[in-house]
Length: 254
Picture 1 (cartoon, one colour):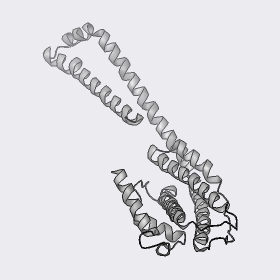
Picture 2 (picture 1 turned 180 degrees about the vertical axis):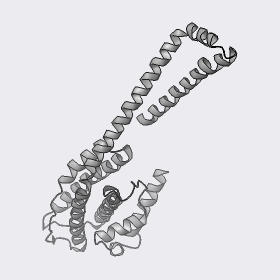
Picture 3 (picture 1 turned 120 degrees about the horizontal axis):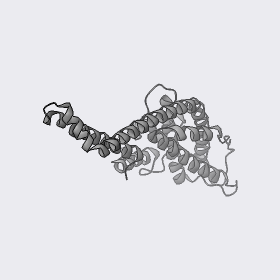
């Protein structure tokens, strides 16, 4: 289905094309056909008076609509800039939370069954939600979708973290197979936030390109995750898991 902006663009194109055709048929052609006679041109306008009134009304409506749309877009840009000013702080809050979450998963990875580590539970971030909500409200669809993706991934991560921490000491299991997935998703969140930082600081244009291995490699480094050490056997490790996920996402996007 066509998006709203594309529909408006098509309607504008059709409307202005119709007005151009009208101008040719009602101004240029009668003027030339009548031997550049002003009387003949006025006679044509008189016979097509109803059409002329309708086209003039359409022209005034089209101009008013586009002026209103232009003003609304400028207001949206101003509102987004105001919301964007709080985005770097919200992203920094998320990064601190990600590092704390990574520390828990890495302690769990090294733990033995039945011996629950002394986890330091990071404080769940709160400020980012309101900031993201305001940014999504005023952002372009591409930026809004990107921020929504982070919000959804955050909800899933928080649920996984709570579930992992809910294990008691006597029945604690490292759950290494699950931890590979958890660490990959945490690295994905960090990589998404890393891509957003330059845009949030007005240093670069927004980059919506799919994540590649270098993005994940940098994200794992930010989280102090040595991906080569997260390995269960020769076929299941964090590096291979991440690269396969990148390939799947690449085919999905194409």
